[in-house]
Length: 82
Image (tube, rainbow, N blue to C red; front, side, top):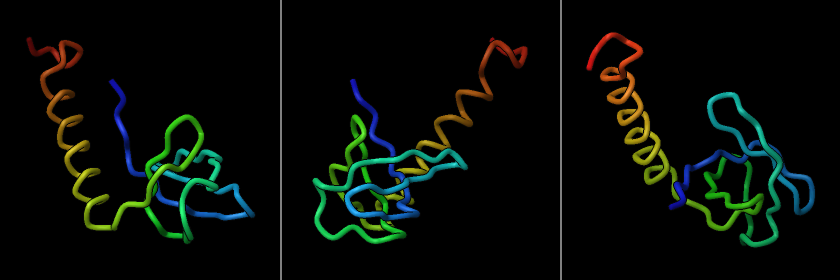
């Protein structure tokens, strides 16, 4: 199973872009998406941007992922809870 996380495009140089989430930055190939712009949210797989998401969809997805992580952290054995 693959989990696609929206990443924000912060730099473009030809067909190569830099995407970011939470301070983590990665280079990605932009040749598979049409007219990417700095600020777009992208779905990246195996180093290639494969689609552009609208901002609302990306923010809703990121919020859901954050809530899932927080819930998992709150019930983890490392925190003394079973």
